[in-house]
Length: 151
Image (cartoon, rainbow, N blue to C red; front, side, top):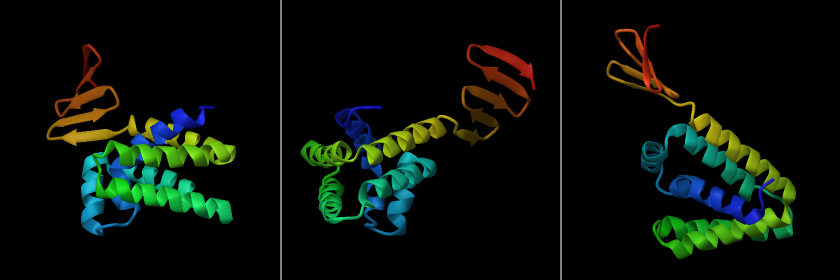
C-alpha cells in the first residue's frame, strides 16, 4: 500500500482536470469540455474517487470533506495555480493519513482507473487502435514493430 503523500499526489494529479465537473460548476458545457480533455471513462473514474474523498460521515469527516471541497474550489478558480493544487493535495493527504480504509479503497480505484484507461480503443477513419495493436480497414494488423498481415 502506498504511503499517504505519494497516493495524495497521484489522486490530485488524476482529479485536477475534472475538478470543475466534480464540483458541478458550469453544467453540460463543463462535462463536455472535461470529457474531451480527459476522456469520458477517466471522468467517471475521477467522479468515483471524488465521491470516496468527500462522502464520509461524522463531524471530523465533515470538516475534512469541507476542507477538500474548499481546496478543490480554489483549483477550479485557478487551475494552473500550483499553490492551490498543493493545498488540495495536502487536504487529501490528511484524509488518507487519518483513514487507512479510505486510502486503501482509493488506491484500488486509482489502479483500476489507470488499468482501464490503457485498454482504450480508438477508431479514426480506416484505422482501429486497441491497446498496442493497430489494424487497418484492409485487415492488416500492426503490433509493436511488425506487420502481422490479415487478421
